[in-house]
Image (cartoon, rainbow, N blue to C red; front, side):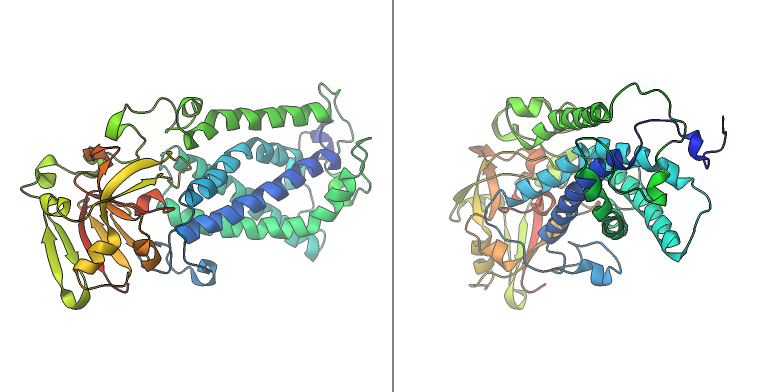
Length: 415
């Protein structure tokens, strides 16, 4: 028996072969393309060219291209796109692992390069495997709120996505034609053409089969369905959320009333104390045209015209809530208080002193939307401390981190 992984006979599974690899490859071709597109959509939702506080990616250059300002209609837009992005990424994990298992003999094949073209293919394969493992691992850790990786998730995932997708695109261009030809012979599971590279997947001395290739695909599909059933519910309310046993925001809702929906950061975690949010201490500073500024206590805000909006909250980790009933002062009315009759951009700052997104910038179109509020109430009662008391921003279709809690200052004007 050969002892070296570089020997084709070392790998004895009868499941490996061009057909099995092609089926998995076509699934990943579609799935990863959707992942990349929804990832770019998520990037756009942060309005990255509006202010450096929204986009913390250094030296992004052409990689940070940006095509449109993020809309506010429909209000559930980010809830849908980010829910698809995260849920699909989790569902594809068994497919990705099976695909890596199916091609692992090629990683050990000798000689390392038969030609320049073969060397470029091997390099793209290494970037594809490394980039894929990095993106899926950091994504899962972020969903689970386990920030074990060095640095910020935002730039790490951003740069990793471009490396991974570039390698993925190069690999797809090289391999998709052959994969499609193999799939045309799905009925008899016989590849239409086997190149030297694809022949490395077939063992010259296969072991006795214990499961068919279709059976193996069934196991992979079953694993994906299991992950879907135990994570997708975090994007819904009621009984469906309780099925999301593998997600931090799954399980029963955290009670009823104004605090009866999910959050990421508690007031205690953010270092917000009751002494600084009480009516005696807290003041909202609103600054606008030509340095015009007003300081408003919560009773003064309550004397302004109050409006209501039914809006969801959706976060980058893929979880979301259904519409909550918010009531407060329109952002465009606060802009008018400081001399901006036409809506303009706004920089919102929190009482939170440390951590990412304690400041966030919103575009003029978000300020102009009549549903965008500085919320003082939710579901008919005062905000709870964990949901942003004494005041928080709520904007339709915006990522959760841009709906700043414990607001202390708002600066209207061009950013």
